[in-house]
Length: 621
Image (cartoon, rainbow, N blue to C red; front, side):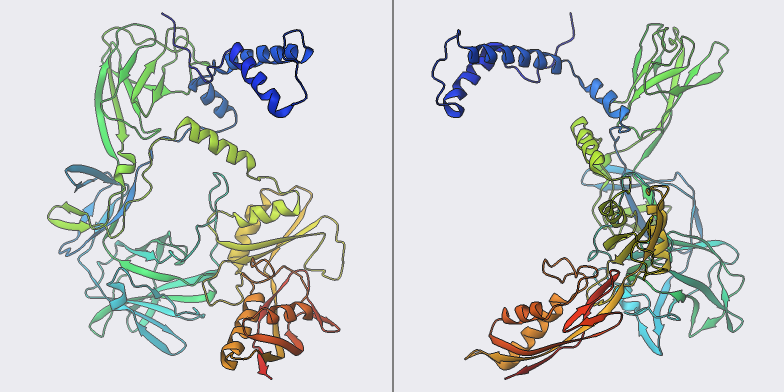
């Protein structure tokens, strides 16, 4: 019995001919002779025959063919992904080591869900009792804000000036000469997703330098940081410290602090929670030495794992030799390059099926050879557990303060094909100005609000109008509401430069800089229509001017003021005239501060500059 042939299209030759004939009246009403002797009908029959042949060929394309085609372009369907979550343990009374691979179980409804730790973690019997922010002679107590899930606070104040400090007070001295960890959960719901560019890894350099210190012998001493996944509190993560040798007690607490030594944040960190004894776990279950079957000496033998789906690359297969020794076998994508004696096998992680060779491509498992498998299985999206699930380990209770995330079912072939299409449309080579701008906007891990590429421009020689081979990319970081002039730091600029440098043409001299800002203020007289409030109209005019001159949301299209675009009085007149309650405007004058030239009443700015709104004076007449 042959394999069933899939039907991608079931139209026959006769059906195609009849469908084409039925469309003649719509598209060619002057064509009235539909008999077989007509040359047009002959062409219809010819094309119907060709279409039927193409449909037949399409019907031979199976899922295995699509997998091969996708592999040729570097796309492999994604396997099931496990969920991840942080578990916070409270009321820890003794120091306890949780080893990597420890299973933590919770119950959602009637189903038990197993999580495992990925690294060693030591719980410590210490509590965080005080959180204080100090900057510019101001002191803010954020202790109560840290106890509530729906409240966040600025780590170093709203402006985060250099020298600002974040102090953490503990009720007990930290266990000495050992590592300890602090988890920082940042508030980022008001921010857009960080940039992504294909499968590239992020390589971010922070624009700030922070110093961690502890109070000992009356002075603040440097606290060694072994690992900082927060990148100086730029994002959520944890900081791993080497514990100090001794600590002083002040105000009934033991203190460490984070001091902003230099630089500035593009987005000031807003902290949602600072947590101790918080363990990161992944929703997998490790299966050791499972016996999926024994060899039976037949070509292409298939054995089945008991649990699936399986985390890709986690499977290890061993086959027992005649001398009872266990021998490792290797997973391959196909048997095309496998010889008769190669210990190779194929694996389908979604079905849990292991396929061995046929004796020509890949070795056959001989009769009665035992097989054992070790692997990790996952529940995929079922691991995205809700908040406040309860975990227990040796009498210590923990719970997750946020939902599980990241768990996904295996990618279908259709989704993989759609991902391939998107990948084809993704720009990986920077040639045109638009290429540079798009690639800069998607710098992995950064939030870039705007980018402008200026060809033949060198910022070191701005007076040379045609600097051959140079490309300057001006970047503006995303900023929260209230930030008028977002300024990129050195780390932000260097990160974008390193990203673009991998994609530029080798002959291009690349420069990445921040924008120059020109402050624009308007002074005008406004006549108000009858029955309109003068104060309300004045306020609306000022808001309209502020919105039009906004760096990120201004301009005629609301997408931000165009780089290097002049400010014309005629546009200011138009903006004012459109305001509700305005009859007409007179005596409009524009003033500016920064790098600009004035041609009559027109404010001309450099190509790397943007305008922002100053203070406007509106006089009602």
